[in-house]
Length: 313
Image (cartoon, rainbow, N blue to C red; front, side):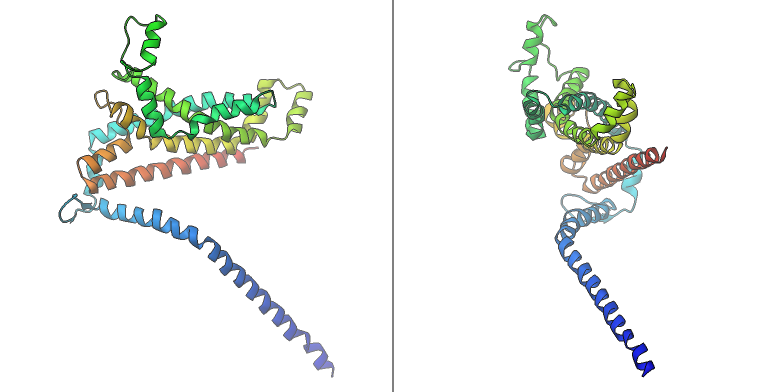
């Protein structure tokens, strides 16, 4: 009798354990069913195209005719391609300049619209409006504004007495580059401002008030309180800005066609020329894979720097 009573809880315990495992398995399969559409989209529109691009990069792949396996020759070719290296240098220079310019404008704007003041909603809307304009449309608009005959900027400079005659702003590298930088800042700064604004609004007001009571000045609060607490937001904004700048194409293609003197050809523009103008599809695929690797390395490096910064006391 005693043995029967002592052994009776064991089947019930096994049943409960089995039921718990079944619920966990059911939850796991339900979760996979929920994410299956997203996984399918990633597989079809990212993984498979990347694998196909890698396969193309290992071939001499003309637009018409049979493909020929050449191994890594496309990758060794780009190491000695002076035009690709020039495009890479220009893209790095453009990325550095435009990222600094965007943050120099977006951060003060975020600080300005973060405070509750009169018409702050209107200010936020007006600053963000250029973001909804497509980059190709914005490039066409600014190409017209910079036109020497029918534009707005050149006659305005002459009217203000800054120049003797209306200059062609897109005919020289320095003025064309400056015009594109101003256009991109006008177009993108509102988006970066919104990202930074979310980080500013996530900082508890009590911390800033406590620092003010302790006698910390505005710059001290910004340096030792605001910036450290916005580290993740700034890292996100940097990754988005740098990635978008490295992939720049529309503004150079529409506004200057890579000129003047082919000095404003970005890496994506060069890939476009090799793939769809010269029809070197295999070489263009190799350039695309190298660009993807560069973007991955830069993003990982930024995330590593962010993690190191957070580990410091």
